[in-house]
Image (cartoon, rainbow, N blue to C red; front, side, top):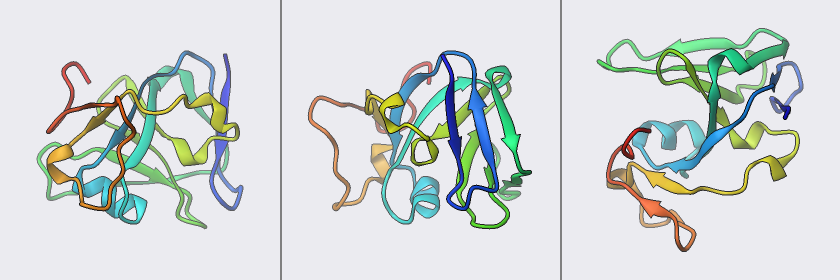
Length: 135
């Protein structure tokens, strides 16, 4: 299986050659900043299966957070491409996928403790106040 994606302007592109898993949406306040106010839709893959095929995304890690993640963005258009939550994992931002059918929709919603009244949650999606077990 191969999943590809890119930023809005096309300067940065990536490919995932392994299996993707953990289809979710995150409502944490940090994701709201990144998404423009809504939840962040994502899926995960092993970091070793993810590679940049074009461009050089810029990395950003908040220095004021104890367990900050590293986020990668296109340096030209600012599209948030991925997040490295911990060693060995990569979070892929669904909006960057070339073929949106590679994302079947969220199985779970995390950080519901930060959800806003205008956030929409599909029927049947499992909810967790913070991280889901083994997320």
